[in-house]
Length: 243
Image (tube, rainbow, N blue to C red; front, side, top):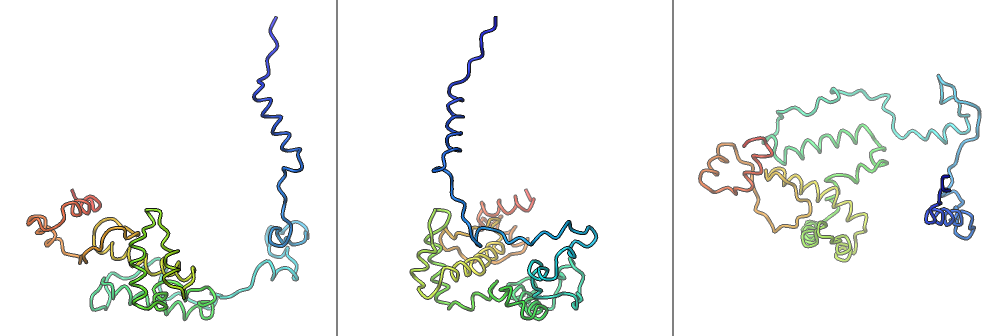
């Protein structure tokens, strides 16, 4: 005769505790009620039409749930092919230089503002990019750089709190906007042009010397003469596929 299968007491106790928690009214979480927590759903008017699903909404609710058109691209015609990109050669005095890049960004920004019209400010494009730096004095920008360098995020520091104490006229939004729109892009651009191979956005190292891009010939002469930093040169060679 087979012995009756014994029930695991531990699992049975776990199930009992689970059922008790479910049945206990005092332990149930309260469900918040109000416009902040419930969705505003349109009244049911029947199944949507397969060919014209937007016609299922009534006239009274169509504008409410479809939104308001801020900018329409019906009258705009693209002058250039999408995905063509910027030409390799331009009429700048120093193609590829920082001034060249800034010039092209400014031209595209002006064109975008012209195309969008009031929507440019409605969508907060005026609060994006290098334009944010115009709201900061040069001395304030230098002070901000020092605060970030002394309190790197990689070490668990919070530079925003110190920045708020140093710039009492700036809000948390102003400081975060400057960090992501101005400071980080400038840092990444400088590191990319220095050809170090890595980008340190925390600035946790000491102030580095400005490194100007050099030609292949001068870089090879630096390796022979022992002038260049061997670790950095090796890193660049590895990342670029040269060994």
